[in-house]
Image (tube, rainbow, N blue to C red):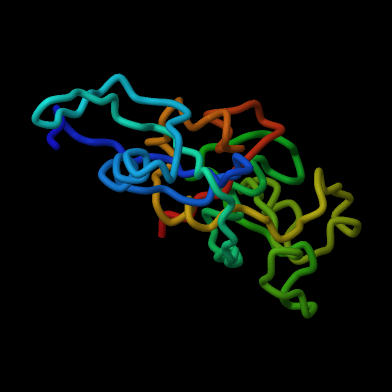
Length: 190
């Protein structure tokens, strides 16, 4: 089979419509052709065999449920920003990544650990204001309690958030650029 231009990956859903991975267009076509998955959504792109034309699958759903093991989300600055929706957890404003840093809720100098439950996204101004104090001591309130995210790992490692196809949006809770600010989805690019 051959296609026109750059072939895009496909989002693979379990039988329950839960995203379980990102696969190549070739694997998507094979799964569909063998009857192991149904095409839920297709791109406008067309692929050709000797005698037939097929629309390139964008989203596929497995016919039978497959068990898989989730891995924990890697602790990175980028994933902290995504978890917190690029919003300073003190002033509540949304920033570009270059204008953000992260803050230890309980300062490291006081035994605070660098963990999902003690680190939040913070703008530079709020970080300077809080300094080496707790939020209570600095008279600053957290907008949300920090916790470890439960994102799907197969997708974090596979796709740049700026490259997410529209066809996937109904099946993912994504980056603020793709959904209203009250939702987010973690993507690990590093």
